[in-house]
Image (cartoon, rainbow, N blue to C red; front, top):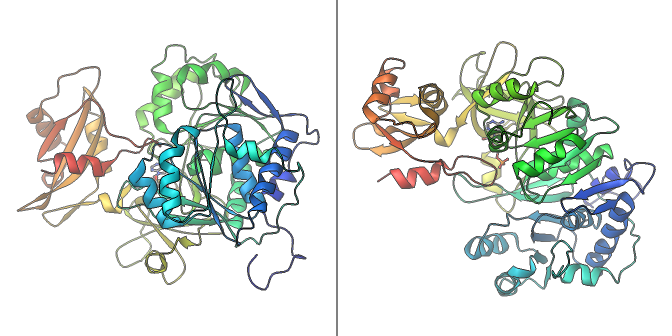
Amino acid sequence: MTAGSTASTPNANLYALFRSRFPADLDDCWLETADGRYYSWRDLERGSAKIANLLASLKLPAGSRIAVQVEKSAEALMLYLATVRAGLVYLPLNIAYRADEMAYFIGNATPAAVVCSPTDFGWVAQIAFSSGVSHVYTLDAPAEGRNSGSLLARAVHFPDTFDTVHRDADDLAAILYTSGTTGRSKGAMLTHGNLASNIAVLHDAWRWQPGDVLLHALPLFHIHGLFVAAHGALYNGSKMIFLPKFDSGAVIGRLPRSTVFMGVPTYYVRLLSDPDFTRDACANIRLFVSGSAPLLADTFTEFAERTGHTILERYGMSETAMLTSNPYEGERRAGTVGPALPSVSVRVVDAEGKDCASGEIGDIQVKGPNVFRGYWQMPDKTAEEFTADGYFRTGDVGRFDADGYLSIVGRSKDLIISGGYNVYPKEIESVLDELPGVLESAVIGIPHPDFGEAVTAIVVPRDGAAILEPAVIGALKARIANFKVPKRVHVVDELPRNAMGKVQKNVLRERFGG
Ligand code: AMP
């Protein structure tokens, strides 16, 4: 609770909000796993109470962080909700992080407890204990012949009721470390109020309705899977079908029993490459949502032709939750992320901070009840990222069209300055992607003695097509100004992507920078 608040103010704890929206019959199915286990809403209420009681028994100071690096499971989601319920701060970490990365996150966030997979206990516990963490637990999905871990073994002895701890809207609920495709990860501090306001807005914008079933294939350590997808179902009191990871066969098999699916663009590309992904398979789906990385216009169009569904693309980030969305009713425009969501203010400004006219490219800045409280233990960095009038500088560059639809052109850090001219990678990538034989591309700046930076293209051929550097350069010279034409074109089999499908331009800069 923040200083000065009293327990008589309404409880803004996010769990209390979800609890108030559970279905009337707690025996309804809350979550179905890929191996066919069912959990009821009562199981969620009781399971999260047991874990919350265990956490409360540790008598941790308010604001203590619980760092969690575990495989996706119903129990992992219960642990998240138990942490919030107990008034503590949830800190999810990508399961792929190894020792150096974990040492950084644990050292930086100084959590009071760490929960990891039983198989990683040895090395994670060593890092945690040497950083002064007092409690390390393990957690895995219960399955025959597998150790489900010490967290549940301990929690099972605690009562299955728990009074959700009183929190104010400004109290922290979670810290999300940014995925760090540029620079070192920073911890984005999100409050109960940030997350509650965003999910209420998304609930209305996407017309969540009774009877919806969410097919959940995203990871749980990221904003998309946790605060957009899982929160959406929790807030709507809807059942989730939970897949441990994306697999096109597993998704296609469950689409007929689902109504909502959310994915990163890579999921949609993979579904389209599966011949079993048909119009019939999608007949029961009400809404396909894409985000976290740009959805290619080609994918958008091919998807509509194959399934009759128009993917709804939205835009957001760890620091702000969701910012814009294509409309549920009305035109969903390929290559755009739609207008600002209600209650969110989004503006595009020039270098002097003045609003750009529609069609003009500038920096995207945002304000609203969804915008985070700042970067964990980085007050200077936080202050730098906010304008005098309270807008957060997203670091994304974009433009509004005349109808208020936003298009993302790239990250400002990816902007290339070549010979004094600004080059926006997205513009060149769009031209490259239209060339015959090109599947997709990434454009980066490489240090250059004359130009400062040289525009460099990395291209993935379509179905083994032969791509020749001089031909690509020649084709681009006919289409765009000379200063934008790549000086070099490299051909690769695939682009490096992180778990959320974002192209890792830092990896490309390292590889082709020499
Ligand atoms: P994260 O904090 O990992 O969710 O990353 C947020 C960043 O992902 C944003 O700042 C954007 O650069 C990018 N992003 C998210 N959604 C989209 C989208 N629909 N189109 C293009 N970029 C996106």
